[in-house]
Image (cartoon, rainbow, N blue to C red; front, side):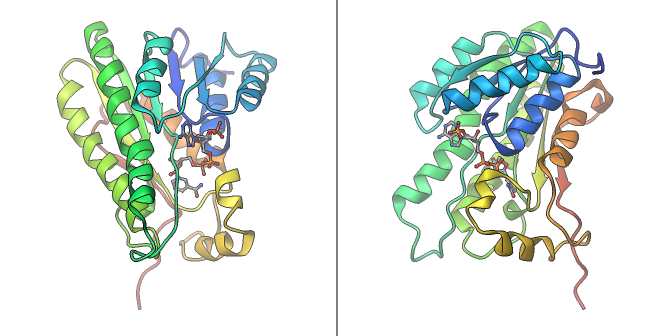
Length: 247
Ligand SMILES: NC(=O)c1ccc[n+]([C@@H]2O[C@H](COP(=O)([O-])OP(=O)(O)OC[C@H]3O[C@@H](n4cnc5c(N)ncnc54)[C@H](OP(=O)(O)O)[C@@H]3O)[C@@H](O)[C@H]2O)c1
């Protein structure tokens, strides 16, 4: 446990699994009171217990479906005043362009771009009034590098990266920093569905030659959320294991 985030409250979306869970545990270990968000009540309760067992401060769980804008706004209202917002929840639906339905496209845009937009719109003005705040959103290497069957997913995250730069400008003068992290392949329940070999194959396309653990991504998020990153805003920090040279 460190005291780096003592006195801060952090809302972490999609904290019931994978990268979000690791971020929630990491911020709690730095002293933040964490609002754990997700849909699964049971896994939400387990993360809250895990934080308490590790000596973390008053964590609580709020369930909300981020594909519903009403639910997103209810989440923001129930979370109340937060100092740190981590827009982590996201969905990926792999398909070629002919196989991408309007429903698949809209679902990814709703959860990956619209929900963060509404959460920032609801929570950043309070941070600005209080004169401080940090927002970190979860992008992906697929937002800037073409990945097969990931057009709609990558586009939704490219929108999130652009919004990150807009929000940094919009709220920066009032002390709110806004950044994103773009991971490469990470072991999570979500990527487990791809099958181990498919994920390992993506890991081999990185300089480091492997898939990341969620804790390695959480470390980058914790840095950007902390005062150690006090002069960093409007950036996307790549945590993708490096890009192999061509030739
Ligand atoms: N894993 C990777 O290789 C990788 C790489 C680059 C970027 N990312 C990004 O990192 C983030 C986390 O990915 P992950 O692999 O850790 O995901 P994951 O294992 O699939 O977990 C997703 C989390 O988001 C929540 N979530 C999903 N849809 C939701 C919805 N409609 N409403 C509310 N919550 C919802 C889930 O909540 P419930 O389970 O409670 O429903 C869960 O907590 C995503 O934004 C993803 O795009 C992941």
